[in-house]
Length: 113
Length: 109
Image 1 (cartoon, each protein chain N blue to C red):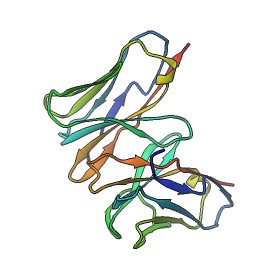
Image 2: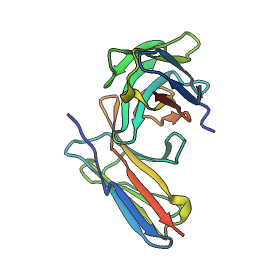
Image 3: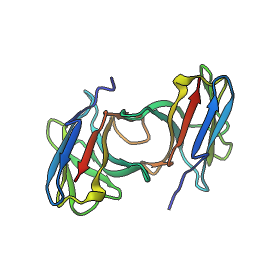
């Protein structure tokens, strides 16, 4: 158990819909990262938050947004969903900067039908 | 753009064999991490190397960071079915991690 909690574990929805994925980092970790993993594209970095502030942005679509709350949990919002958004979405946390050890949650499997 | 290339992309071998997977770049990294991911789970960190030429051992797994800190290798001795998984390398640079696409390893009993 990494100590990072992601909910829900599975999510099935339709095109055009909006969903929210939730992540609780390990106790004491200030940084939260969101990654997308699909079969043909490996692990793609989306966005990082550090202590409530956006720290780094990767290949995150404009239809996607995220935030980190004062209690350090984070949410990833995906809107106007398309078939191609179907993927595993991982949250990871670390004490501070990403050069440190990352602890990953078990992921949310999103299926857009 | 910094890239990390992993090879091979896929490897299927028999239990007991040895293997090496590679992680290469034209860029210099301050550190190099190796993760293993099992189906349905998130990646789990195996090791971090930070010094050029550094070698770290984790039981039957040997990790090496290139002298110029541009490449790394993972060698598994006497592979076992429990070693099956996706092996990912990630290079630390400018306060971000650059990820390789992974090597999918299958060890057949």
